[in-house]
Image 1 (tube, rainbow, N blue to C red):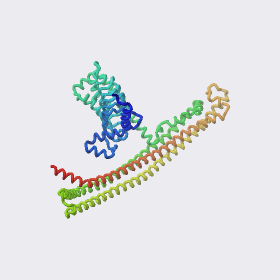
Image 2: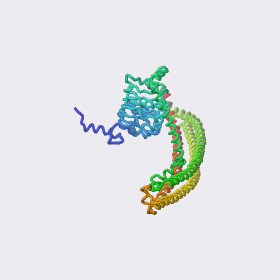
Image 3: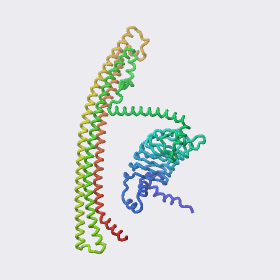
Length: 569
């Protein structure tokens, strides 16, 4: 008899409740699935039961295996920021998504799924192993940034072209590759094995079989022409990449100096961008062009001064930041050494007092197991000794806690004070740079005004001459409306001057604004980093104390377990 459909729906409700988004069908990774898988894989038997009583610390999970779980979609992995190995093989996943935050990931297994495209891996720059075996991938793509890859498995997919294989030449660490089982590997007139070996000379294994020198030489001989063509293209691309990297590095340096786009004629060019009034005035001809060239030269000379000033101040600021960070690190290392010594001294004391406690507790427990009265003189003496040991241990532990906390609070206050002083120095340094650059911007505005005044004279003379001669044939259409209207000319001049002045003001304001933003962001980062470090250190100290307390508290139970075990032997 067929089961009741309503009952089947009711039976599915608990499963649906496990999904983060209730409206989505089961098969999406959620927190409960992650925690259950961790407990099943990491712990067995009684150990698993005990761990189930405690909350799972997701930040400490490095390995996650979610296999054979009919997962349809990757999600919720952001709660595992320190994951280094992730296995999602043998599921029903159709897309690589929602893993870009796993930047510590070194191994990723997505084999035996329904993935159609390689994507969303760019951020996983620490990946060393990627397995996409037995999926539905048709093109090798989007793996250029994974320069640390050592093993790539793309076998049993739908790849029918070698187009993406040559991109693996840029992966200097790649040693193992598998492409077998793809349509491209089954072509009768093409040997994929030898092609791969020829164009990837650093590869050691193909389809997990070691590549012998004889086969490598034969493959290179067969695909000699293809290899030469690929090498030529690669050389050009490497040169292009290096040039781009240098340009990006220089652009970053200039941006950090707040003088980007001031190393050439960029500011002058920006003055004319969108300046319709200036464009009309330049139609006057040769004299206006000569004046503009002189204007360009004067602007360029001043922007060069701002540019050099920015680089000089950048070097000073960089040295200041480097000195501060070095001093900060030295202070932390010094306090860490002192703290380590406190802990080592305590641990030596702990070993001694634990041994003393073990002997005393063992004797006390043996007496109890033999039926001795707990109020007997010997047992009372032993109990008193245990109490004294506990007091002594607790006092020593409190002394250590006090010493560690004093050191940490001293370091925290010292860092806060150093950051405040550093903030003051950086503000003064940047204020000096802004003030000096503003002096140059004053000169830029003066040059702009002077250019406008000279342009007024040139345009007025041009129009006056044309009116006197009644020669209007070569007068541009845009200027003819100004022939009898001096106010119109003055309006054009004023519009051009205002436009140029506005551009200069904007560039000046940009320097002032960005220097302030830089300082604010840097100090905020330093303060936030210190708050996080301080909290973490306090948590570490308290956790250590709790661990020591628990070790002492569990000692009687441990001794009892040992004696019981000895009785059975």
